[in-house]
Length: 287
Image 1 (cartoon, rainbow, N blue to C red):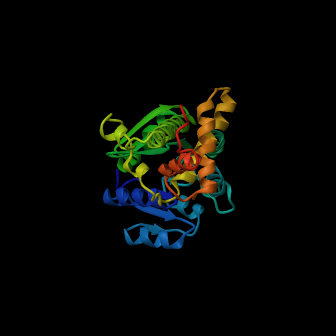
Image 2 (image 1 turned 180 degrees about the vertical axis):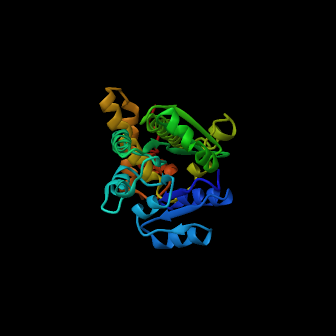
Image 3 (image 1 turned 90 degrees about the horizontal axis):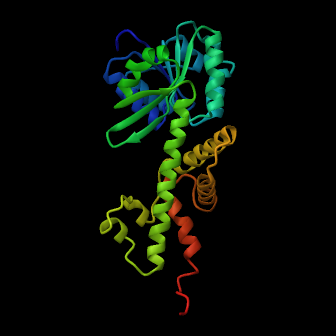
């Protein structure tokens, strides 16, 4: 399969670079495009072929993977003057591996189908053993994509129709953000109470990331991306008329830290929200 299916990759950031390594290790012919020419050069050094536009990637591929930050970027890549749709042929398949609005996936599934091609959503999340993929789309398109998706991940499953891969990714983001926020609040409460804040982790046995106890949160912008993802959760919840009050509050926490802290931090940086709130209230009330 690796010698037969030509793969295109649009977006060669941290995740796209991971895809590049996995695909080239398995011998897939790979054509890549990114706005950052240096990232394309790095992929070429690993055996990929560089392209000058998304349309050029599409012309050289059977399966096109999108590894992009969100809906605006997917829309630009798909519908631009030199976008995917401008070069798409019948029988090709586009796979969106980013976290995107469900409405975006529905739109491009329809537009690709009108050109005789396929489009599915397959957002990712990291786990201890690697990438886990959640696929939304028709069974036939899933089977067409499965060999490539199995190459770049340790686990892949079709979870429903188009857009439902994104819906499960929203559940993932909601749970991760909620668990992290509760952990931050509990640790800073313990600190305010005069306790060793590591007791919940070391004695009570809760799975709390070590980084929450520190002061360094430099990363690659996951806080900003997670804030964006929670916004998609709230939009979709509104469309579904589903109530997510806790997620609404946590979304505000992420926003406050992105503004008052640093949007380029990774997610545990939200602990600074509680540190700021508690900075002037360390004195216990009189009995």
